Length: 199
Image (cartoon, rainbow, N blue to C red; front, side, top):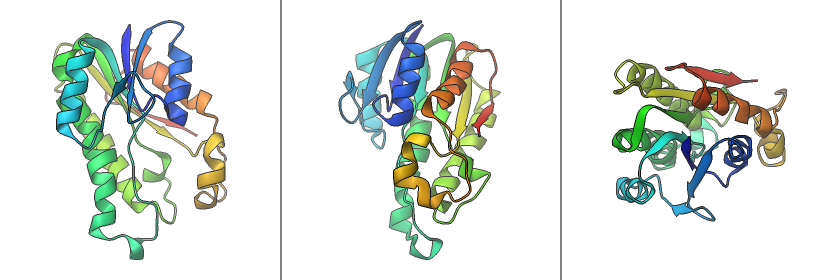
């Protein structure tokens, strides 16, 4: 398959690329260090990316920013980070990418464990994740030409514990390589409308 990974240079994206590269043609996209440059907060940038890439069999998003901080510090402006990037950015990858995905192709988006297992400081990211899950479930029954859509909801990563560990007391982190298996399941499997939670 020809697979476009947005966020391919990040921790999860790199693991997904490593998992899939031996069996598929991978095109990487992201802000830095990728084959194609893209800013998912910009519809124009997403459109330009798809025009440059051409037809693909699968689109994987392992990107999306969100503000981490207490509810009392969550201003409308801070909340917009998750809305514009993690939420709208990923959804726009689908809306603007439908005509660029081949028949029987797939989209796989990224959510996160905290939409089901809340942490202090994670409300904005959890909000975006829950909205994406709702979008995936609803969009799955309307996707044209046999195209599938799923989302992967990873636990905190072993590789990210230094940065995010204090937000996740008592959580048992998972390696990015294990999270990558859920993306493989979405791309190479046959299910749609699913949330693959990686504990």
